[in-house]
Length: 351
View 1 (tube, rainbow, N blue to C red):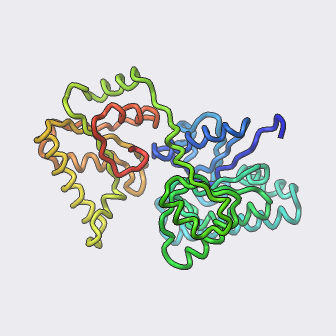
View 2 (tube, rainbow, N blue to C red):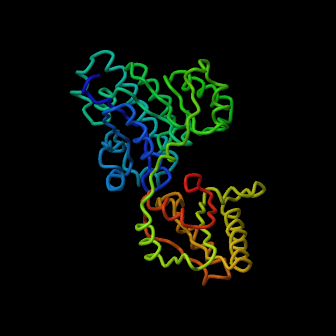
View 3 (cartoon, rainbow, N blue to C red):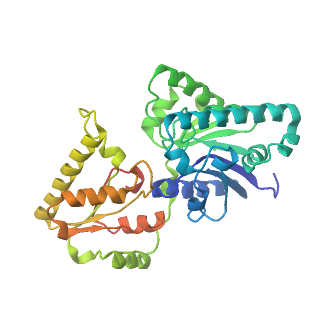
């Protein structure tokens, strides 16, 4: 392509308040450097939030605005019926755009002139299904991998499933749909052996699927001076004895006990059990507990700081607990976690 940059469209949202997700995005950008000069665009449902946290050299597409389906807050808090209407409207617009491009070519951009359509048209490659994003269900926009894959094929754009981690599609209908998506993409990279073995069963041309690694591994850490500044600010002293870091999520704790039909009841039991374990560490090993928030998303009970406070409330040895409430970058969190003696987490990218 000479001096022309390769235009990459990440056609899904990577929430920047989830620092594991943001670490993935930073790692993805590092891998793109192997291609030479690139221009990267990405979907966002919270552009005002993500713009301050994404790397500067990335173009943000306001999906809610461009598709006329509302902003992130309205979608996250909407009823199932409202969400279903938004998802259906999004899919219909994608099909209309695909047909219009086939009929009118580039001229369609005079009418469908929002940034999302321009980026679809001008992109050299489209990326979907990072991390644990379902190859069928997608993330936020239900079934988006299906209609984005169809659009990419009609536009004759290469489409890539990037560093995915899927272990089970569930029902037969989802397996059928997943088979279509997986065999319509041009390249599939998988981040772990379990997912690789599972996804290979659905891929006919095995040369298109590769076991690579999680791009978050490429995340750099801040230097030791910066880490010391953070520890000083948070009142964490390396001389306090055994430093035990903790990052727990409502999502995992609410499904910790299979016999519980009520997620909140399972969550409350898990909180009590973890509090007992942490108290035991304090009493037996004179440990200091440091709650490190790896996700501070303000919706669907995804803020780790809330979980930390509830575990803290259930503990006896509160004097040996530090709850970090400030927001830190993925690089800062990696440096901080590296200074702890033990780290206990339900979030994969924090460990």
